[in-house]
Structures are given as structure tokens and as C-alpha cells.
Length: 176
Image 1 (cartoon, helix red, strand yellow):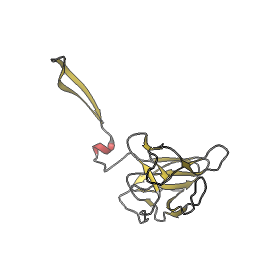
Image 2: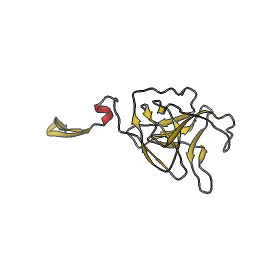
Image 3: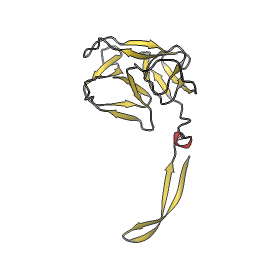
Image 4: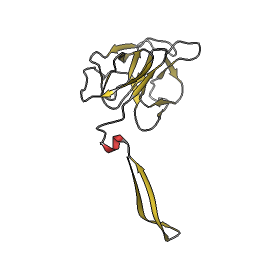
């Protein structure tokens, strides 16, 4: 949905130049005042793992399992252990980054009005969901370290340390 209208009058060089034509597209979020959003999707690769983040609570699609990262006590540079907690009730709470496990394919998440019961206060996964394709994440200055889920050439899929700013793409999460 968009508005296309004349905005009168347009001025330039101290004279009226006629009418300005304005095209103003609206997102579903703007139209519904964030009460509805475009369904989020995730594509799981042959590694059978991915990350996900949404601004609203969503139901976990059939065939997927979601986890929050509750501790990373042994993270040291490039290697370490991350303790994950499985989301048991089938609902990813709003603004919660998760790790997703499942078979290769594309899955659609359905928005729900339920809050879910997962304790997310200690979750170390952050994310982005918005109208832009990605968001820039600055290099942390507070002593924390960021890790992104990737599969570098000749290595296994896992969380790898970022030594600089990076992009987090829409509906994706990273470990902080």
C-alpha cells in the first residue's frame, strides 16, 4: 500500500514551480502500528543449523528446534563451549535471538500472541529484525566479544569471533 499525492506548491528560485508529486510507500508494520508483520522465514543449509531473531513472538515451525545461549564460560578467542537451553513450549519470545536446528529447507514462522515460557534474561544471542536488509554491528568497546554463526572454508559450522564491525542480516542473530 502506498500514497501517491500532489503536495502543493513546490518552490524554487523564490517562485512557485507547480505541484510536487509524492510517492509514500507504507510497510505492513506501519499500517497496523506494529500489530502485524510480514512472516519471517529462515533457510537452513546443509549444515542443518542457523540463527533467528524476530521482534514479535513466533511459533517454531514443525521440524525445527530452537535454543537460547545461556552461558559461554569457556569462550577464549576462537574456541570454547556455549551452553544452550532448548525452547520447550514451541514459542520463541519477542526480541529473542535463537539457534535453530533442523533439516535443510526454508521454513516460515507464524506470529503468536502468546509470550512463551522460556527464560530469556540470560540469553547471550542478540539480533536484528527490521525493514532494512541488515544492520551494522559496531565493534564492542565494553570488553565483550561478538561471534557469528558461519562455516569458513575447510572448517565446521560454528560461532566464530568477529574482530571488527559486521553486518547482521534481517531475522538473524549473533552471540555477544
